[in-house]
Length: 223
Image (cartoon, rainbow, N blue to C red; front, side):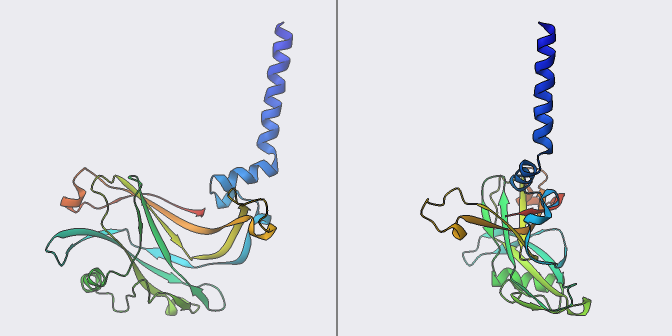
């Protein structure tokens, strides 16, 4: 009896080990876990380049609305530099996801932009629209922009900002929503290499105290 049990345990262990080393399953797990470093390089498509992306931690900014109310906006100042030998097109997209399931896409917000530009004294600061375009190679051609987000829910404790447009690489995976009669080349979802930066907010009155966010992590992902 004990001998049979031991054999079964050994068999299950060997099967589990085989699953862990199966390259196909490992590649699937890497995609599901959004881990670019664990994805088989043969699955990565697109152009092999990535902008050098430097950023300041997000900052809160109190703005008085036309109605006289005070709202706390958030902004992220960043600089992109091309290390490629030729110019590259930058199409920035910033999306903030909070732990309250709120989604905020970066916008122009002229009043907030002017307040940021004035307080930070960055001469060539560009807004979300102006940043769209060519980035020439080298440090002398670096461009500095700001991503501005509408006010967050006051019970927000944590948020992640996804920064898209920084790389020419992407992967494809089957689209679970594709219909049977969909052409083969349209049955895939394209996921681009994206930088995710996560922060948490201290206390439960950050919106009143203007508390600084606490950096949690920075990593590349696919989305």
